Length: 289
Image (cartoon, rainbow, N blue to C red; front, side):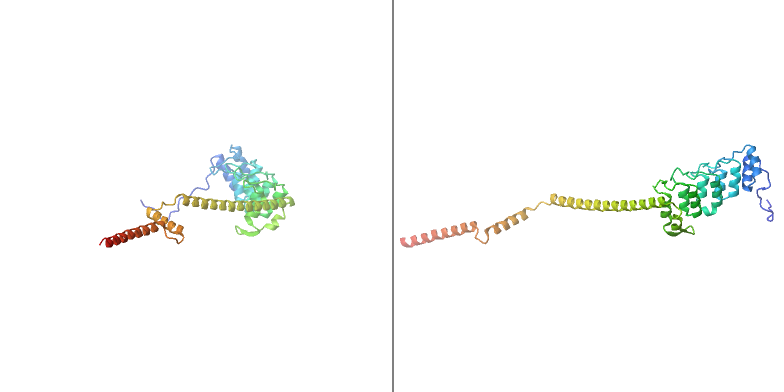
């Protein structure tokens, strides 16, 4: 088959008209065309429809930081708290990487999105997510909107604790320098006092835990030494017969304290007696001669 190498590659016809309400709606969202959105919705498309990625149109717009699309979707009646199959609301999504999504974040705040919403897994709310990101403007706006500074996540940390643990005092995070002291100044005094008290309590708990670990290690070491000593005493090998005899001889020698043993005296006496008998026999023989 001959193929013309200069022929243009086949491409999707971008001029084709949408054939379904869903296609019409997605095209309108991409173009941020409010009239087309409304027309697609009138055709029967559900504005809070969850796509194959588990996201709604509003969540996708927040992820992309499209403030204009967010406004248009809210104007068409999109659910401002709809999570889809994700664990975050649109405002929670906009709280993360705030610089890129800050305009969409402000639109949601103006529309009275719930600042107290949190994910079901890690129990992080919008303020904690903003503190993880270290975006001062988002944190300031959330505090103005009365975000709860005392809410704990699943690790028992408040937003201020998350800020301190994530960024230290002044570190680079994703290429952005975060001035933690300046952000801390945005928090009410009670939140700072609470974070300081928890930090001190955690320090004491850590020291207590370390001391307990040291004591447990010492006790375990002493128990092992005692067990080894007991085992050595109960498994002492039996002495050989020869060793026992030698020990008895040594004991006997030690017990005399330098005196001649009784057995030696008996042998000497016996020899003397034999010599006396022999001497008497010789004397008597001479007299008879």
